Image (cartoon, rainbow, N blue to C red; front, top):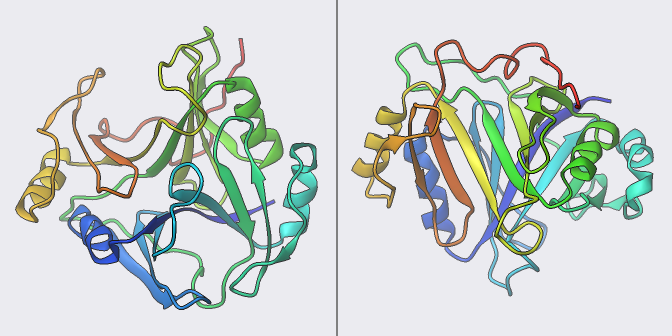
Length: 272
């Protein structure tokens, strides 16, 4: 099975503010369109990662006002692969392509559907030699049932493990990615001892970049509210930012050469 893209969809009442938040981050507009119900929508791209922003005036959706989508060539094999997770029936999505929904055990609901004409052609993600550049794009959730969510991604959705740690309990982590292109990553973190109640509450989007200071400067110059530039536990510059509607955005500087297994062949995870 081959996935084209992984996409995070944000529903917001302040469409202009949400879109402008991503511009100084180096996101470029991939497509602008209207939903079948007439709402303004935009897809912005960082590396091979996509965020879809939809102007939604109605009541907030249950849980957090955003979802994760996987765009695939053929939905039938994916539907069979996740049948143990009780997916919805394959139906016509509002934009006229087949698709279905399925929920991870303690993670998000995935929308899996075919490419929308003119919107999801394969992405080219050239690196700008003058930078700064996004090295890859991650969606993270803290799983209360880490093994179940990890199995959902790997055995159910067919993601490959780029790197990870299978023990001890409470400290497990895996970076998984769809086969296509390799830079759209779902990170599942063991939330066994996490203090945040409820599934899906503790989410973030990460952008590993080649220069966190340059990205931070661009956000400050654009007038966006960002945290001070600091250091991660593993000793690289980082900062965080968010809008009123969107998820937390965590930006950190990748180690020289990139983290092994993130953008090349999968490094594999040994479950201990």
